[in-house]
Length: 233
Image (tube, helix red, strand yellow):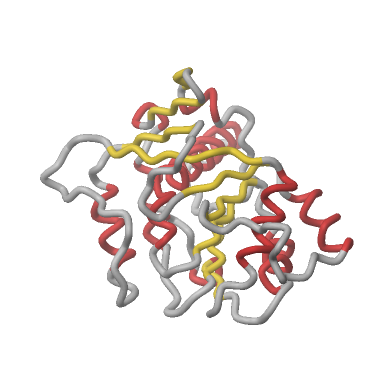
C-alpha cells in the first residue's frame, strides 16, 4: 500500500498524439477493476511498471473517494492485480503493490494453464509481452470455445509492452517520477537472481521515466496469450 503516496498529477500520459491527464485516462475506474501482467522472464514486468503504478494510483483514487463518502479514514486494501509468470524463479512484485504474494502466479502446466489462470483472476486490463504473437504456422492448439468465451467476457482492454520499456509503433506513453519508484523497483529485483532488461534510473536521477505501450484488440490479445502458452517454465 506504500504506492498510495503517488497521486495522479505525478503521471503524464500521451495517447496517440494527444496528452491526457491521469484522471481522463482512468476515468470510471472502480475499486473492483483488475489488471494482469504476463511475464515470460522473471523481471520482464518492470518494463510495464509505469502503467501498473498508474493503474494502482487510479485504484487508490477510487478507494479514497469511496472511503470519504463512507466516512472511513481507516481503510486498508490492495488492488486485485496479478502477474502471470512463465518462468522460474518466481518474482515478488509486492513493491508495485501486487500483493499479497498469492497474486504472483507461476504458470507451469501446459496449455491452457495460462488461459485458465487469467480466466480465474479475471483481469479487465491485460498487459502482454510484445514479442509473443501467434502465427498461422504455430503448432499451439487453439483454445476451447469455453475458454474463448470467458476470455472475451473478461478482457476489456489489452496492451503490449516490452521488458526494456519501449514498444515499436507505440500509441500510449506513460511517464512517472523516478523517485521513490526507483527504490520499489530495486526491492523487486532483490527477490530473484536475475538481471532486468529495464534499467530504472537510480535515486540521484530526478528525471521522470517514460515507458511505451500499444493497445491491441481482445482477439489479438487472446492469440498472443495462446502464443505465450508455449514458453517453458
